[in-house]
Length: 74
Image (tube, rainbow, N blue to C red; front, top):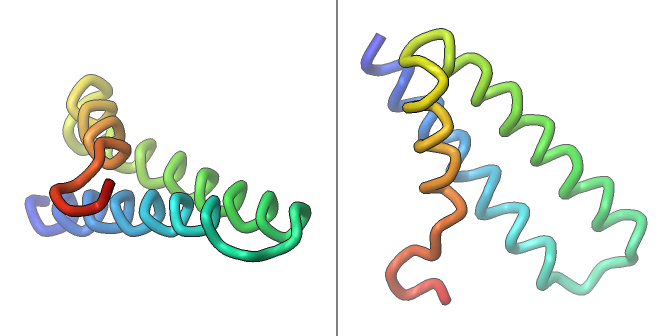
């Protein structure tokens, strides 16, 4: 279970980073929107799976942490 939790945390973090990257990338509006929407759908799925493993509060904390700026990434 711990490895699955760690994997889901990593996937959420990767999807979040990809979303932020897309916001600053040079791409058309519709393509950017579709890309970001897909990343958010994936994060929602990972959050649901994580909720089943660790509970809603902890899973939501993980999701919120993904949106916090990382050191050197502001």
